[in-house]
Image 1 (cartoon, rainbow, N blue to C red):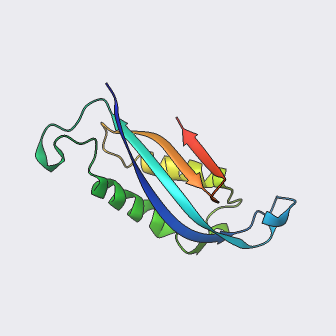
Image 2: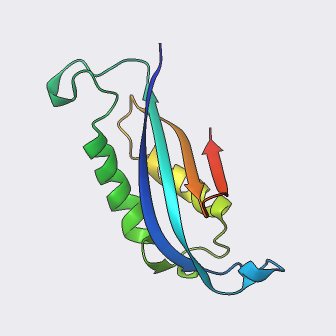
Length: 123
């Protein structure tokens, strides 16, 4: 059996895509929506996380410290050479993956740039 949980986050940021030959080459902003899905083959069997894959609060703290504090209300071009949703999603995936407890697997990072457009990164 495999158990998974998903937590949703939001952040605001501006960027432009320097290599794009369209409107996104100009500076603009987005209200991003981010979903992080993690899993485990068992539920925690001791402590305050007993019966959970991970405490949602712990996952929120990890994402807030390592992702949202870097991206929220930022000019993404100061952080990424080409801040496409794909490039950002890979960075988010790699940043979160190495910081999870060793028995928890990062299954998916899903990043919405608009209400209709999202990128999904999985292993």
